[in-house]
Image 1 (tube, rainbow, N blue to C red):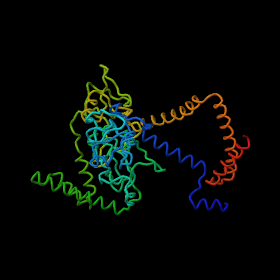
Image 2 (image 1 turned 90 degrees about the vertical axis):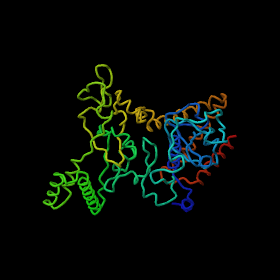
Image 3 (image 1 turned 90 degrees about the horizontal axis):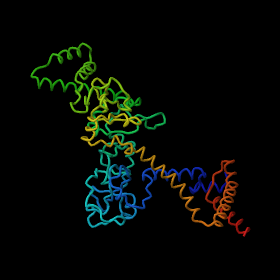
Image 4 (image 1 turned 45 degrees about the horizontal axis):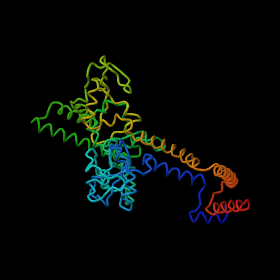
Length: 438
């Protein structure tokens, strides 16, 4: 390596061309995915409650939260303010300039409703997240130990991995490369709202046992479980006035086996929570067919969907206080019979049935807009040029391509990195050749 190159590395002005281009494109793509392809030129208020869009909050104008606005308003109306990026939100209409902002006006869209009654807000609009109510990005270096932040697909709040309720013996389901094997999560607070998912074991991805947890931690957990079971026994004695026969037999079993773990396990199995009685359980508008493909809900003789939550269907326990991990395309598996549709509406989660609500569809739409924009920019530019200008431009591009290829080939063959000085020399040489031609 030449001394000049070494100096450039020390100055931090060295990078391979492919790395530089990849970095720029990755940043542009990340921005497009978050903004959904929105260029931020027009306020989205006229589009009503959009199924999903990028939303921002202003701590300068509304430090107590409860208001948000679109990308365009973040640029035109809140430039220079302390703006919080909330990523994407569902069913949201821009608040900028309405009564929530007092005397503040929207520079892009006048005459807005006093309030957007269908908008919903959470603590994120004040700039804090998770059950720990921390800010993001978190200036505390120790926050990295809390793990990655993940968004609940129901409440749309963000949570640190360590604060989602998994015990230390379990870890998030990921592949060998550390990538999540789940598509979406439901936080522990929202799981009761989606208790019907226990009837869909095929969409639930179980957390993985952490092999690196020391045995002493496991022993402590077992000891804690035994202590809790003892508390349950004492509670039964208090309620019933005397020790029931099954507790006596468990105590005898515990003494004979020299430990409480087996007795605890048997007791817990007998005490399995009874599923709550509601229209999510055995709902249906007619007799269910024995089996059907849940990705395409079956129909009864009247043409109505047969309920997938039929009696006798396999189920999986949803652990209280823990999150739920969901597989790819899990939403398409949900039953769409009239009873279940009513249940989704009553629980205000009917958005789960809308494919356009998913982040995957939102990002796919953003990628399509990105490609369309790239194609249209070039064609629109050429259309505005005269014939002679087009010819000159095409010749210039061909010359530029040839010169650039000639310049970069040695770097590619030797693996040498391209510095800022190399780029400057290239353009000086190109301008010199152009002057000689003229």
